[in-house]
Every structure is written in structure tokens, then in C-alpha cells.
Length: 258
Image (tube, rainbow, N blue to C red):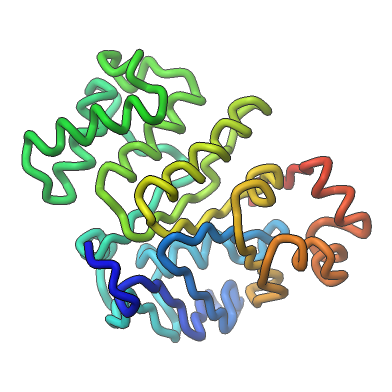
């Protein structure tokens, strides 16, 4: 994929999603650049999942505009975004349970248009890089939770995304698995140059992997910027991290799933 500046930006402009008068997302602007890892956080019910659904075109916009590389994709169905390099994961990992781990990743690459030989090579590369090569021949249904989470990411990365949207990838992981996942996300960015938008409740991953953080509250942008600036913002401390925001972040507090 081209790395021309105009093709390396994913933008949401004045995105609004209203349900029966409820403003789930209310005028959010967000810009994700290739090579950037951005965290999307906020209290329960802040609108994170709705925004993720809207920008990946799984949730209809009330108003607003989504652009990929300057191209308006606001009315596109989700599968067309893959052709522009926008790939997302879901809170519930989507796999083919009866297929092997290798076949699952291979299908992710084939779905992005790679030839069979390139898809197989891509699958081998990713399984090695994500430490799944030892279970490559097992059916996906046989994987423990941590490996299943990594398989979901491997399937997404197999599509060679320019922009990777990760929806709570650490859900259900233990402390060691979460720290490993944080390093994996950074490695994926370093290896591919893709932009990563990360919706996550685990503050270890947010503050450990992200160069920028976007905070939602009641469907609106509360704060956006570098991690340390967001951590120190009193509005964020009050609304999300609590009055002892810095201490909470350092303790890597977990918010409940919304």
C-alpha cells in the first residue's frame, strides 16, 4: 500500500450517532495517522464501542464524515474498507473454530486478496511473530483464551492493514498476557507501519503502548493528546481515572466492560 501522506490518514469528522434521542456519539473528531498507536478510552457508556462501530461502518452515522486517505467512505459497507486497508477486531474473537490456527490466519490473508502462496507465507510469518507457531495445527476451538485473542489479532494483521482497529483485545487476559499483548501491538506497528486505534480498559496497555490518547465522556471528546498530558488532565482524573488519576494509571486500574 502507498505511504503517500494523503493516503496515510484515517479521519472521523464531526461524527454523531443518535439512538431515539440519546446522543451516543456527539460530534467527535479523530485523526489516526499511519505508524501511530492511539488509545481510545473513557468511562463505561462513554461511547467508545459506538464510535468504533461507526468509524468501521458497522454502526450507521446520524451525521458526520469518515475519510480514509482523503476518500469519503461514510456510506461504505464494512467489507469495502478492507480494500483501503482498514481492518478491525471485535470484543468477541471471530474465528472459524473447526479450522486450524494456520488456516484461520491464511484465510485472513486470502480475504485481503493475497495469492495462495503469499497467504501461506504471510500466515507462517505471523504465527511465528505472535508465538502461535506451536499451535498452528490445532483447531481454533482448542486454544486457551490468551492464544485465541492473539489469533484474532493475527487474522486481522494478515490482511495487511494500513489502519488496525482493536476493540478490547486484552479482555479476559491475565497480567502477564496483557503485558505481552502491549509489546505485540507495538511490534505490529513497528513491523508494518500501520496506524492502530486501540479501545482498551487495561491502562497498562494504554499508557505502555500508545503515543496519543483520545478520551470520550458522554459521547463527546473530553481530552486528546500525549499520554502524560491526558493522565494529568483534571477532567480525565475526575471522569475516568478518578481523583487520584496518576496513581490509578500507575496501578493500571481496570474499568468494567461497557
